[in-house]
Length: 124
Image (cartoon, rainbow, N blue to C red):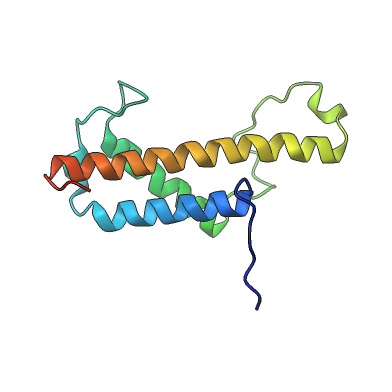
């Protein structure tokens, strides 16, 4: 099987980077309970322990394919203009959004890992 080379802004590379960042986070964070009550940078009401659990759950869902097209449990209202777009434009729109979300989650995973290392007194 031939290995694929991905463009730096490709979705497969972004997903691979995210999975790698969460894997590093899991290998680094040996005591996740130390993250309880440590505020997250983005959301003051949330702690890093909640972020840790969320980042792991998202990676699990992405890697195992838990999101099925038949799932209608979480319908999100779609802007009326989107269905009128050509399929290629619609795909680009959704890929752009997905890429942005995966990139944001990857950055959060890196920050959480670094914060944990700071908490236990290890500088990276």
